[in-house]
Amino acid sequence: MNNYTPWSVDEIAKWVAQDIEEGMYVNLGIGQPTKVAGFLPEDKDIFLHSENGVLGMGPEPAEGEEDGDLTNAGKQYITLLKGGSYFHHGDSFTMIRGGHIDLCVLGAFEVAENGDIANWFLGRPQDIPAVGGAMDLAVGAKEVYVMMDHVSKNGAPKIVETLNLPITGERCVDRIYTDLAVIDVTDQGLVVRKRVAGLTFDELQANTGAKLIQQ
Image 1: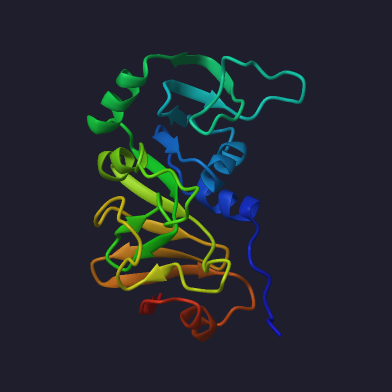
Image 2 (image 1 turned 30 degrees about the vertical axis):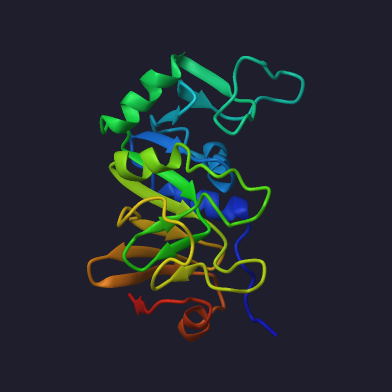
């Protein structure tokens, strides 16, 4: 029996939000990363970008106040902060490819110990066979954080020595946030910054497919 309780998605999102710095331009990927928007500190100016052409996103609208013209790239309803804007899809990708996004937070199926990321294709018949905007974000953003479960639904580690799935971006991930730990990807290896209460380092290592370094 485990002596620890994994973090919820909301708890992971809070850790990510706390690490985003004042003045950053940030893209939140589809899936778990969208939760980060609801936990950004109110005393910081942080500018949220979405690749479908929005800058200055606010939190999710209250029920009944949704605007069909305001959605993020994941087709979720959003709000627009004062001074926010929306623009052409091509201009949005010019921002990404031009290096104007300070940080992106992506979901992932796997992350390798060298920072490679796989997040677009599991080989299932229903999967869309195209990498999409994550490829541009992985190489265009100045920093890349990943939010994901530590292991897959069948219990396989999602942090691995080398990717088993088709790659999205090479050596691009700087930090990994999972339901068990926060891990930095460094030149020395995978450094554990924090882990859930009650989880030992050996237990974390047993759930990880690459060597970890205890801080």
